[in-house]
Image 1: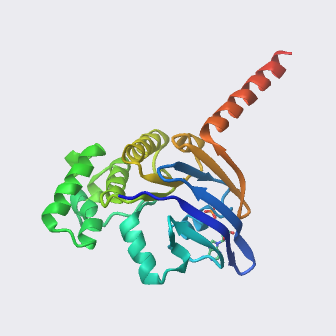
Image 2: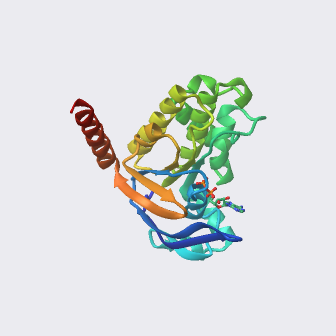
Length: 245
Ligand code: ADP
């Protein structure tokens, strides 16, 4: 794996009269864990899709290291997504007819690995994510939290440089969601994988290093998680001081 910085400049995406992205500049360092938050409709998913080359912007550029992602043809972007990016969605991303290990092996099989090697790598990743016992089960036979761990294993198996996660805990109860986010962030950290996660849950975001808030298609705030935690603690103290007066 060769993790590189992701750099976006001047991203604009408009749907009829709606500016889903109204001029976004963002650089995400190699190995950085970033949360994207903001109200519904603020442009979070659009940003994730443009950064990951799923969607082309109307204006602006996305670079991964020296490669200009937005200048690549569809086939080039598909190849880049397959080789460099992993994806985790809210739910429904696993193939229901396949077992956990077959689901996890898919990205390796798609890039030409032998079945034996793909299955061995799948088993290893399932074990690392604490769902080794589930390897012969199909998604319908697992809990939501287990299925998300399988989905995370699948996003990591081909050793991507960046994982894009769109509300990865959105379909889970809070406790399970936080467990899954803990697993996702610690695994990304351990592997030096960059993680970009869209979430509406500040506790989920708190597993990352940096919080980017989007409003009306623009970056509203961009802070380190340490700053977010400090200012929340200060606000709490001020509130208590005022109450105590
Ligand atoms: P978020 O993920 O923050 O909820 P989105 O990126 O999904 O926001 O959407 C941003 C804005 O763009 C919203 O107003 C949404 O209705 C609009 N939008 C997103 N995708 C489409 C689309 N395919 N067609 C038309 N409008 C869209």
